[in-house]
Image: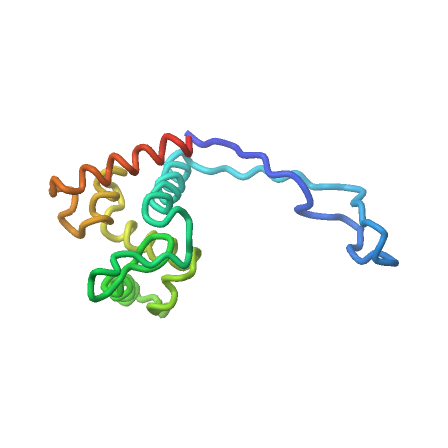
Length: 163
């Protein structure tokens, strides 16, 4: 089932310039186009999961550096390690995509989310939020590891707050 979200505002202005004659004037549009965007329930749930993972991993901080006690720390909103950057680049090569990510891209919220989606869509296209979350936390067999149950509970708590 699709949900319809109404996005209104200054999306498309018809016949109105944005440059005022002087800096104290405001440009007020005469017409505003209202656009309807259809987003599937699956897409909404996927976005909720990403936001929940970001809250659990970094509280939304792009400059977050975690696991400093390890040789290679995790970086960014989704706490990505270099091995995940390599895996995403490997997936892109398999898919015939020329795009590649660098370790520096882990500091970008947008690029971190892109990498997560590439990984998720390749390895976990039809898996539950629990399997995706637990594997994100502990690797390919993370969903089987007892230690990831605590992580999954944190993600569930974050999902409830987002709802």
